[in-house]
Image (cartoon, rainbow, N blue to C red):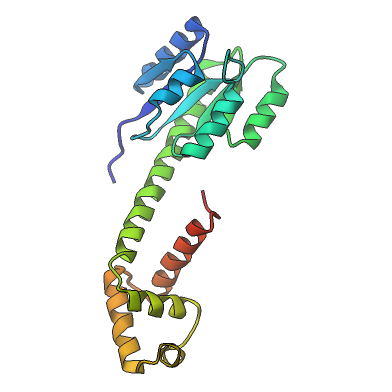
Length: 210
């Protein structure tokens, strides 16, 4: 899979620091866009490519922690790197609990920050890949007929063909035919792969996976 265009978003109310962070990201060939407030960033927030968000913790209006919470609720495709001043360690800990990818303390070392950015970008690529895979999985599930869904759910729950046939009041040969169609529509090469796919959708539906 080809890697998408990278997007780096800098949320920092200090003009000089914001410009410095944008320059640093661009020095590593990563296009960067700066925002002077969390509010202005959220108005434009619509992640279409992997990357990361770099946000200060203390800002007028919405704080970096509040921004992090809002991003987590909207979309987790872009990891958030939090920048803290000396003495803000408690806030950094709070940010990590809220889902921050990492935090950097001011004054930051450029090399250290670039390393964190690269790790965040790799993580973002992983999240986008999972999203794309999940979208493909849901699309394949939509190919199934209502009866095939009934058969699939029972097979995944461990029922034999005979029990599925009894439960649905159909013949075992009909169950076997449904299984073959399900395997084909789901592009599954093995029964184990099929089970893993369906179990994953159940986890997603229950909110047990990010």
